[in-house]
Length: 511
Image 1 (cartoon, rainbow, N blue to C red):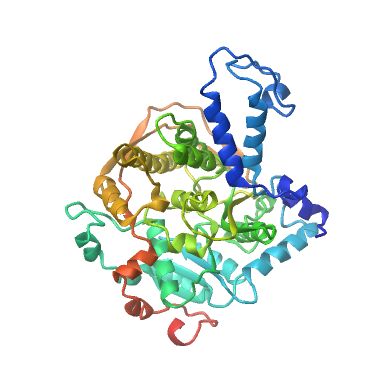
Image 2: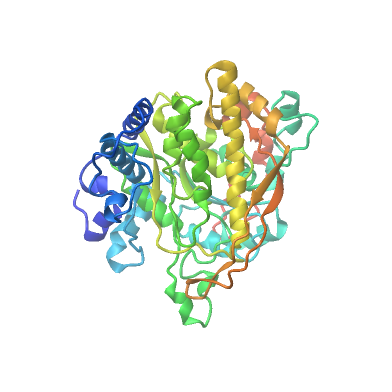
């Protein structure tokens, strides 16, 4: 295939060179190389470094010299792994007139001839922004394939004129028999489990779509945070007399992610595609130490080490935006809290590494795409809140690690959440669901953003550490498993009304 100059820059380096990366092979080789190094006696000196090593480039002195020449091979494997299916590392702007072919490829992916796309917009209380977010996606997706889901009546009312499908989350969740889940032992009987969070809102939209036959093995489902104000030039961020604001380019997450999906080689399918860092960093690096410990564990097993290596690829652990192969969500235990994002790509890595027992002849890959614009939210993002949220997400993942070690010691083998059986879901929830977790975090100086998108620090005041308290995570069985158990009343879900007042509202059961 012939690519334009910008299309070529948009591709990962390995695809530019005509190479398709075998990710499981790289992960296993890197793990084996790391394990072999642990058997080397101390005192080996550094014999060589690759020419692209940061140590060589920056002329830094190594803190440790207990390496040997295998460092070359391991560093090359690391670079291959971290760059695997990472699109747009050169920050191509889709607003560039020369990027029109990329935009067209993205829009073709979002609006295929078989219409087998779906976009969920989980909104908590987003009364000021939901109209903009819904309108942006309505322009990109087929009719009836964008669904706003919210528990807030004023948000639903604000969305109704702008979206083909608008669903009250509470009416859907009422059709999940929570008492039956308690009686079957999936949820603790004597501890309150709060059904809230973005994952719970997405679950409501997913179940409604399943009930109406909108999801099958070939469906790709997207979702986007609903408090964003710079999705495109029609957004509220640009409705101002200040020309300075126009220096910030639109975020356009659906199009960037769809473009990455569109340029995947025929040898691979996407399981998950999500943004890498975009604008203001969201403290994702807080998760890295936990994942590094998994990759380097001496008391875990090969699955833990390899999952750690895979997780360390993730540039943005909790972006809020993703395009997902429907069976990923349909068949994984579903977490209703902030940790939902973590389980999405953990499931992608399970599929990628063959831990899921999928038995498919197709290669599915986790994909990331760089977006050069910042993600601007209606009320901004507090630095303290960002730190707290990131550490909360990390603490949620740490409960999985604790549970993994417990399984390993007890049974000799273990699973992470994507592989939880009924018995493991019950055991995890009994141990962690609703238990109050203490989450400590630091208080950095506040970082603000001016109208042109530039960051600045108001002061360097110091503050003592803080702590917040949150309920421990819990898992529903997968949507597939809940249907098998009969705890979801699909007939009643089909009766949940579509509250849209849009001129394009669908007739019949969807209307």
